[in-house]
Image 1 (tube, rainbow, N blue to C red):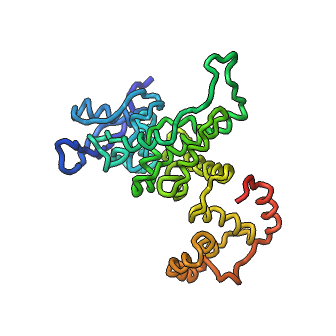
Image 2: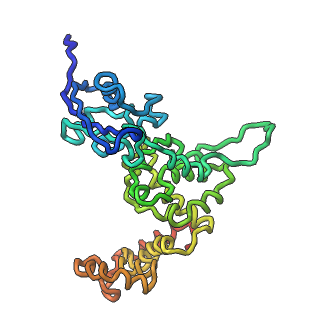
Image 3: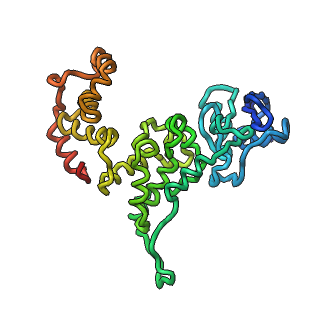
Length: 327
């Protein structure tokens, strides 16, 4: 029986930067034979142990629960302790892998970043259970399986920050809370024992930092190593705002309601009417150059030429039966 170890010779182009001594970041290349069972964390360890003892990164549990070792490989967010290296080679079809921190503009040293912005926003959304409890209960507070399912596995989040630092809105809007924070807000809002739902919703409804600034790019869902699917929780928070009567009258909420009105009216989305419904007639004028370009490419039509779905009656019935709130 052969005991020969099967390996691949791989090249790792590794981000290096020390905020205390370096003016600019740079990359160092390391080549090594990598076994089929080695993880990204094994590679980080080998770079430090075999090549450069000054190389820095975070690690802790090695079981995918603490989230400390999250980095990016070829731009893909990964948990170093869970991601197999050969799988990445197959995904990217290359023998050269780029190792980078989650956010290059927040780097302290090599793979270590300053996550203070993440934790500050995390704390603002009350990421804990608030409830009036009996200090000397005679029995436990029971949560039924059906009630527990309403959490939609949001409690699986390990605050690794992969979704947060993959979010394009976080990159351009320093106020934006971010997908991990919204997932955590939903986790406690959906808990039947919690009493702080209204407080959280009043926080997340604000334009700028709140849920309405999500651009629906699904990067957070792709980045999450625990399949928490933060975009789903953001949508649930949208619904909760309407259900609790806390949705403010602004462009974002009118845009959301405009989708429903368009579908009820036509059975399909009327892009031009959606802009008018959201931003008013003056808003339409602001988007006139884009509207002309879309009209030329057949993406929008004149109001009198707007087609209707052949299944309009069925669609209207479905919308009516599925709507839980009054817009």
